[in-house]
Image (cartoon, rainbow, N blue to C red; front, side, top):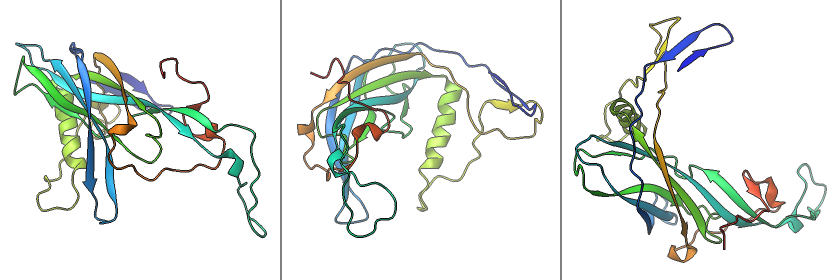
Amino acid sequence: MNIRTANGVEYASLPETIQAVPPIDSIFFQYKKQPTKDPLDFVSGVEVFGVWQDPPDEDNYYIWRNTGVFFVKTFPERFIPPGPQFGPAVPVPKDCCDECWVSEKDADYSILIDNDNIGNGEIKTQLVAFIEDDGARYIDKYKVTINQLSLSKEAYQFFTVLKNQKSIDGDIFDPPPATIRGNILNLTNLESNVIGYFYASDGRQISGFIDRTILEDNQRMKETNDDCRVLNGATTVEPVDWN
């Protein structure tokens, strides 16, 4: 990868090799609830696990991304215009719309990676996403699509260091701080440390629907007093595979 900025600075990455990635044969779901520092609060959602056959006699490195679609119901009849109100707030109902489907990318934005150092060539079962119940996603079912991507060994090492550094929260057992070095060079100034990594992957997808009945304790439903189309990624067009 080569980049030239508007002010003439040139960047280039080291080459990356794309390694084939096996398909995920199936996914399954498991409810998860965990406490927080607030004894009256908790985090809950659905863990997504992938199952696949790891190729034998080769080193494989994996990373996962996810996309999702969910149904929302809002209350445009309760819409109150923004700005100062003189006296009691009076709703100014909107004509449309109260039912939408929202598409989102990376509901789980954590770094989920793995390798086959243990269990090379065996059937793998791995956590590939956690879709949190945020009070909006599980009004109806949730369609999750898992993208299983391959990594080079060098890219895997980069994400491992990045994941370790993101886990630092001030505990005595935290990993020591480390300099995160990518594979991108500043050709104009070789002494400059460029933060970032260019990688290329083979990818396979699998989708499934999470039924809301899997949740044992639902979070409080979020209420949006507006046209549902104001939500990012929202549309009133029902996905063709929803029912």
